[in-house]
Length: 140
Image 1 (tube, one colour):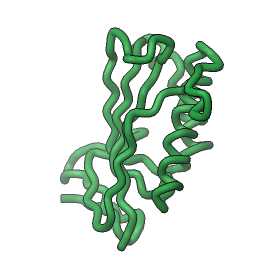
Image 2 (cartoon, one colour; image 1 turned 30 degrees about the horizontal axis):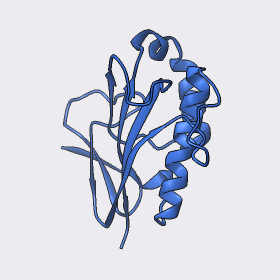
Image 3 (cartoon, helix red, strand yellow; image 1 turned 90 degrees about the vertical axis):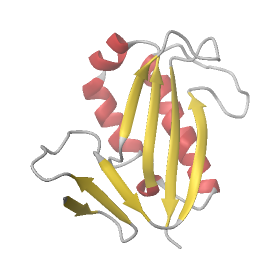
Image 4 (cartoon, helix red, strand yellow; image 1 turned 45 degrees about the horizontal axis):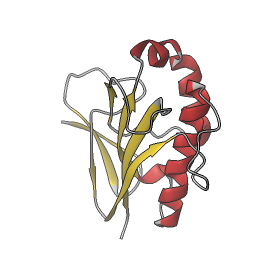
């Protein structure tokens, strides 16, 4: 198995012979304290109100909300080990990929844990266009 080290407590896993994916990792092994971030949506967390119906703006706010929760738990984006995205439009997501990559790098950095993206018919919050769950591991 081909393992790529990132931080002392993380090992990115890439099975022998597999091509390196772009924008995510195949697997990760981690040691430390685990933080679970509930599904975050692109609203203002102080008011729990959406300020926009723009997909990219909601992704921006969603990622910012995740980073805020991570910071509260003593972690940062570099400690992420898993992201699960729920989007209401595959077309919106795929057509925004170049802009999403730049936005992601701006907020999260060049850290690409395993990710899954699921297209759903709707989210619990009626105006939500994206929801992201996160898991992080902070070294002991």
